[in-house]
Image 1: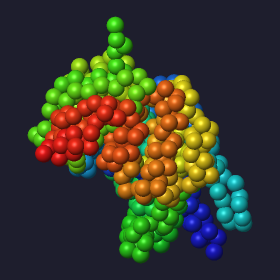
Image 2: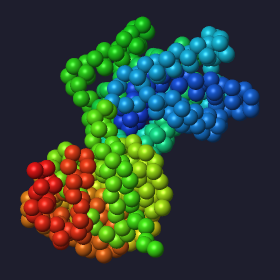
Image 3: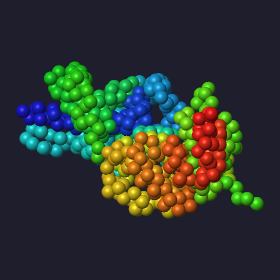
Length: 289
Length: 235
């Protein structure tokens, strides 16, 4: 019994990470109808940026967030203004193709710079620290921290979206770009800020990913799929739905892995397909704050 | 020396792809003046407003506003200079509440008389429904939100595209009854209208467009029904 409690608990905690993968993806799609195929590779890029930062400055990965988050946000803004804004229009295909190209470029760029060797961020003692929740049920401090950060990230995004002038600008521009311009909003700038926010979340997700497990330049696309699945399971347009989607995916994978270690990823995909078949609009579609 | 007009449109052409919608159109609006633009469907009235507001490309010197060439400027820059367009069909932000729509209108933070409080005094119905989704309001109230959202940027020039469209006559009269309070703040107004009677009552001068050209212009009180009918239908 405690065995299963452990499994589900681990799944829930990993789900927080998946929710962070998904949140940035969902934000960008919501604001500008852009499907960012390079999202997973940007997560891996953030992990390498953190690797370089920790090695160059001799700081821990969690402290490196102070540098990695703003840096990724700046990269996001520049990426949007210089490249992605040019692809937006009536047609959904150009941004899809361009971000696909970006994905290939990031993967191969990282491969050239860092080789295909697996790397990992070392967070020190916190990685193995645990506390006893019940008899036989232990919770890692790091997964718990990751989960708490995920909740904070989702709550912050929800707050920005529904309680701030920036969020109003995001929603207005998503509703009608031409009318938003009549209100004095420069769409190119608003989209740039949305991508900056998305990549700030990507930075946090990337660092936790890299502390948790080995990474190499090729693992981005799988993170993209997890992100997509979490968004769809949760329902488009709802941040807390995305969070729930991440947890469903995490638990499904944990259960799959417990039955047979080879079934981890498969179990996640099956859960995704079942929800797509039974509730194609997702668990919590479009809840207004 | 006569004072130069606030808005001066000079020899403006406008295109949708290969289709030309305006042909060398010229018009002017003086400070504090209310001007009506009338004409049949497809005469180019909305195109004219979109060109002024920066939603369609134009030659830089084709549109002068407040002493500067603004032709072809992006819409957000035109808005920052003090032109607000109330778009045809209202164009409210559906995922924003009434008050959020107004706040977006005011996000340029141009100084002036209009604030949320002033808007709610002018249209009390909006104050009562400030937290409603904008789409939950009646058509007339939605039009009030659209006009108010334009006013929130404290523009020097307000462009209104068919504010009577799809509304019951009694509602239209109600909205037009508030125009004097708006004009009293020294704002200039361009009204594009199908409802000629309302338009002539509310404005001092009229331009009648026909197939992308000015067919007739003059003081609202002096134009005869026959002259307008001739310019309207091109007979």
